[in-house]
Figure 1 (cartoon, rainbow, N blue to C red):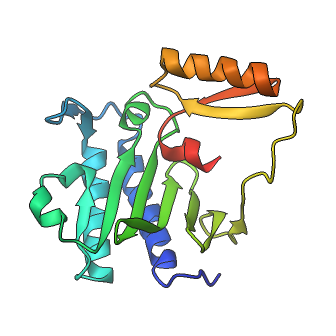
Figure 2 (figure 1 turned 45 degrees about the vertical axis):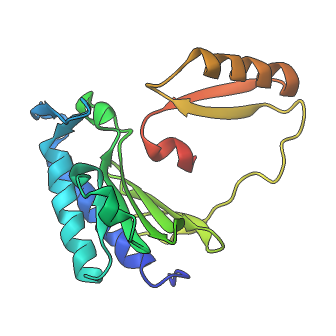
Length: 201
């Protein structure tokens, strides 16, 4: 398929390769250490990080990379970036550690403070989502033909609808919001999902 941005296809491939680098660590009891912010990191995070960093640098060495696993680049340096890659090589590390399939690889191209396009891939099944402002959005499977996707045109009052929320970050505010939605719009189904996968459904 010919995507509307020349970097989309190679970045999709890179995200899928990073997923393949993660899988040998999945459900193996891999060691977990804590980062400075107390969030967990594993060898899988670092393997995917290094693969993505090398791949993005090979695509265009002039575009800097900010990765969750190497975020110690000073803000004073980052403030001058007009075009850069934002990477979370293993989003949903807690899901990964607990053996869930709900973890992803995330790569986005940023220009002038706005997302040009982003890729989310799911290592356990080879599915990916890609999209960008004014570019469209697609869902695909490794080796398959991507299918264009879009949000529902409008919510019809009284029809059942699904609200997607974080599996691990519920709050009283979220509960009040859900109760209010249900009271004003009708029956809702709640899907608690980990990682950025929730934004793709």
